[in-house]
Amino acid sequence: MYCKLVEHVPGQPVRNPQCRICNQNSSHPHQRHPITNAIDGKNTWWQSPSIKNGVEYHYVTITLDLQQVFQIAYVIVKAANSPRPGNWILERSLDDVEYKPWQYHAVTDTECLTLYNIYPRTGPPSYAKDDEVICTSFYSKIHPLENGEIHISLINGRPSADDPSPELLEFTSARYIRLRFQRIRTLNADLMMFAHKDPREIDPIVTRRYYYSVKDISVGGMCICYGHARACPLDPATNKSRCECEHNTCGASCDRCCPGFHQKPWRAGTFLTRTECEEIFAESELALSVQIISYTPKIAFKHSSPNTRAQSKTDIVGKQSKTGVMQGFSLLLKKQDESLVTSESSKHRIVLGICFRASPRCSE
Image 1 (cartoon, rainbow, N blue to C red):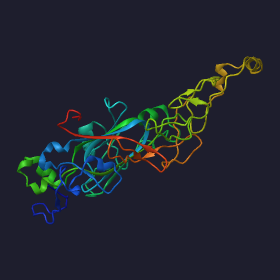
Image 2: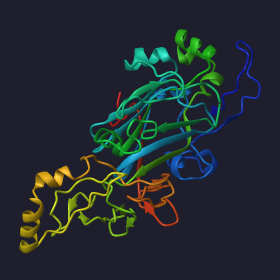
Image 3: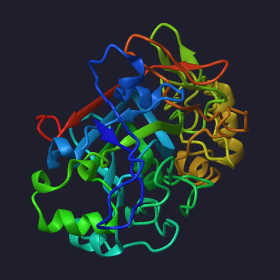
Image 4: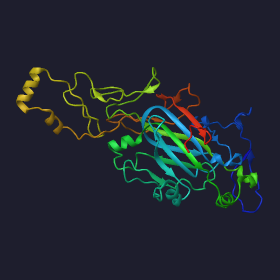
């Protein structure tokens, strides 16, 4: 059993506790709140056990597998019938083994220092460097008590957002995304009670109302095509998005020049420069070219744009731009063997996992 959090006067009985049943094995669908509800695009939600079942349920880990590496632009988390998480970490990984932090969240600015050893970024999140990892309490407020949202931008607002640097590309590249919840947000009056009493001694009407709930997890990202693709559709053969390379480039990520187009070395495109691979001259043409302009790789480099790496990009609905297309998706998968609908013309499949602290796959 769980009860929705309703503010009340400390020391007075709770009126209208709004208690319900949450049971994963229930024969009634409305009583089941599995983790797949967080990404099915419907008006359903995932819900964790309340701390009435043990304080270990402060620690919950959710892992998303996007099935391939994308450059992630943003992550949006929407709460359901509880406040947003208090202390938690958003993390990224390429291999599901080594995870790196994207952003820390804490109930107070002080806890940014005491828990995560990071000076807090006050006010709305902002970023001074392309790969800066900040800690913020902006999204850990107790209000709203339900249906709160967390918007985390990983590209916009950073110095090279308009023409991504190698540092920004590395920082935003991920296949696995992990949400590591570490503390449920509680009312301040109840927080003092938890600090001085064993949870088993506290009235269950109090402990039953503290749990996590997530209505939706949305992720926006781009295929990594190094600025050499106009689109990135789903390949039905592999069920993965594939760059439609142009500028005489080849490879899964348009990361090399096609055969016969090595007159200049391959270079990543930018939002401002295409840096096409050029066809190799015939011997007579090459000799004439050398005779007239003394063509050398050094001159080729001199007349090229700076070697900056960038991604194909447009807005989140896939509108075309000069250099590529941005792949957007909202993680609408319920089972591993079903397709994730991302728009009218593209699909993508993901795998979603969840574990609690007792599981060996969870991080401490």
